[in-house]
Image (cartoon, rainbow, N blue to C red; front, side, top):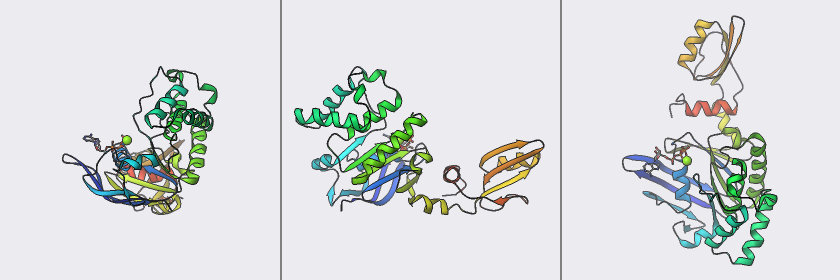
Length: 289
Ligand SMILES: Nc1ncnc2c1ncn2[C@@H]1O[C@H](COP(=O)(O)OP(=O)(O)OP(=O)(O)O)[C@@H](O)[C@H]1O
Ligand SMILES: [Mg+2]
């Protein structure tokens, strides 16, 4: 079985530690990499693509170091900042990338069509990229990353700028692609990975603080989500002290949902933990991790 193995992968930029001893094994399936701005997601992904060299540690695909030239044949990558050549049509862009990847011309054309169909852009194949919506560009980004039929697909924030309809379409596409390869996608948006990722990885300040299924990760915050009904004055105090997920006012009463290690006030009762709570817990400083 194919396997991508990271062993204590570390990256320093001067005194800044962008990735800190990350060890991880990826098999076939979809992995969602969650983390706030600056958590180290792009740095980690670029190292996994072999385009950035770790300061220390190693990354290997089936025993082959990812710095090797032939690893590129197994890899598809959609960078976070992606030049889309606005004057190119979708098809011209696909053929251009295919040429860069060394795919022979007749094969390239056939493959480009197949992929534009897969991402539902076949009708737009002749349109200039500058006329595309954000979602169309993202789908084109996935299509180009698939040109060499990669066994590993790394997508850096592929859902940025998508509207809800495009988001759903995109998720379905990723689920299909994950059936027979390793897919790793990064995002800030918890709900992007909720339905498609088999495994959720959470990064914070360069460290991998979670690696598990959604259920496993949610279990870690059980007992820390609270709901209470209070008056304005008490609400102000609670809002100041704790991350508040939801606030609703009815007459003089204020309904609060918040995150706290211990019972925050007398009227608080434990609530069922959900995904949104999870993100707030890990990225608002409550967890102390
Ligand atoms: N080339 C660089 N030189 C110096 N510092 C860098 C460089 N690239 C990234 N960093 C720093 O390393 C940390 C991790 O950055 P990275 O881009 O990997 O985070 P990220 O999780 O992808 O963030 P975002 O969600 O904003 O894309 C940040 O503090 C960033 O400022
Ligand atoms: Mg990034």
